[in-house]
Structure formats: C-alpha cells, structure tokens
Amino acid sequence: MSKVTQIAHPLILHKLALIRDKNTGSKHFRELVEEVAMLMAYEVTRDLPTEEVEIETPICKTTCKMLSGKKVAIVPILRAGLGMVDGMLSLIPAAKVGHIGLYRDEKTLKPVEYFCKLPQDIEERDVIVTDPMLATGGSASDAITLLKKKGAKKIRLMCLISAPEGIKMVTDIHPDVDVYVAAIDDKLNQDGYIIPGLGDAGDRLYGTK
Ligand code: PRP
Ligand code: URA
Image 1 (cartoon, rainbow, N blue to C red):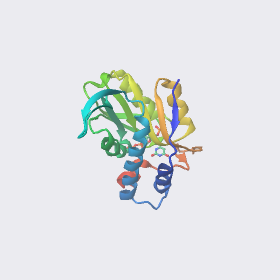
Image 2 (image 1 turned 135 degrees about the horizontal axis):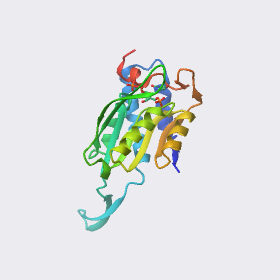
Image 3 (image 1 turned 90 degrees about the vertical axis):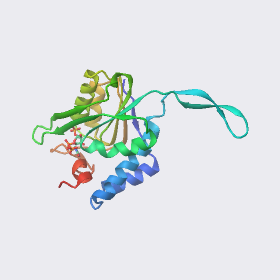
C-alpha cells in the first residue's frame, strides 16, 4: 500500500499561499517552487540509509553517520517538474537527473509522451519523480509506468499541489509508490484544473500564457 504524506510545515504553507496568488509573477513563482521543493526534500529523503564512518575532529576520533552511498535519481516530468529540480539538487548534489516529457492533451486530459532520457543505472537508484501538480494523476501514473519499464524499482512521487482524484489514481495503479504532497486541494474542475490550485504550473513558471 502506498504511503501518502502531506508535508504541511508552516514555511511550506506560507510559500504555497504566495505560489497560489495570481499576482505572483514568474520570477518569484520559480523561486518559490524551488524553495518549497528544497523544504520537501528534507522529508522525502528521511529514510535514506546511513552508515557509520570514523571522523577525526580537532579534538579526537569519533563515529558519525553519513549517507551510505545509495544513489538517487531525480526525474522531473517536463515541463513544470523541472522547476523543482534545483531545490532538490541543492540538498542532494550527487543525484543524477532524468527527464520525462509528457503533456496533457487539452481535450482528452490524457498524457502524451514526447521525451524520455534517464540515467543508465536507473534500476540501481532511488527515484524521486517531481511535478508541482497532481491533477487527474494521468501524467504521474504514466511517468511511473515508464520508469518501471526502464527498470526503476524504488520510486517516490513528490508534488506540491494535489487533487484527491490524482492521489487515488496513482496509489491505485502504483501501490508500491509513496506519494509526498504539500497540499491536498478540494477537487478538479470540468477542465481538469485543481480547485483552488494555482492555475497552469508550466505557464506560470515559464511565462507562456
Ligand atoms: C501539468 C502538470 C502535470 C500535469 C498534471 O503539465 O505539470 O504534469 O499537468 O495533470 P494530470 O495529473 O491530470 O495528468 P502539463 O500537461 O500542463 O504540461 P507542462 O508542464 O508542459 O505545462
Ligand atoms: N496542470 C496544471 O498545471 N494545473 C492544474 O491545475 C492541473 C493540471
């Protein structure tokens, strides 16, 4: 069974309110998405394995814990997922980055794949899929299916704003995938937009509308 974690830290809630505000321009929007992704990374990586290492401080030798070298891959769903990558990389600089290009057909709301480039050793890596929006769940579900076909075994999904419909689809299709979100909103409107949401994440990040 998937674990669904809502990370409702006060700093995240504050930044989410600014992100949702229609008067927030692209530059500030991009900075906020990156900052929230960095704050969420702290929780998403909570169970990464550590190992004991011996360190010599200026005073004496001691035993400390460091990450055990388990490899991580961050896989944004293009375009909007890209906005979360730098925030994640600032905490996990050794992670490799894969890219999956999907867009949602405006009429059918079904995702259409147009790009996939993953680290060669994806099957050995802990994969964190990033996308600010989990609406119907079609894009995230298809991206995870594709990752599994390419050999990925341990996959987590990290989104800023989610709808109950999207959480249900992903957890029904991929019960082995843990889902991390900053907010669970009310529902989708007839055009598949999250209510209250933030509008179109890709357009707001890159100023394309
Ligand atoms: C948005 C968003 C997700 C998807 C969510 O991308 O970034 O990938 O929609 O919707 P779903 O859960 O119903 O599939 P979009 O298709 O607008 O592409 P873009 O990031 O290039 O703007
Ligand atoms: N994609 C977005 O960017 N926003 C939504 O509300 C739904 C899908």
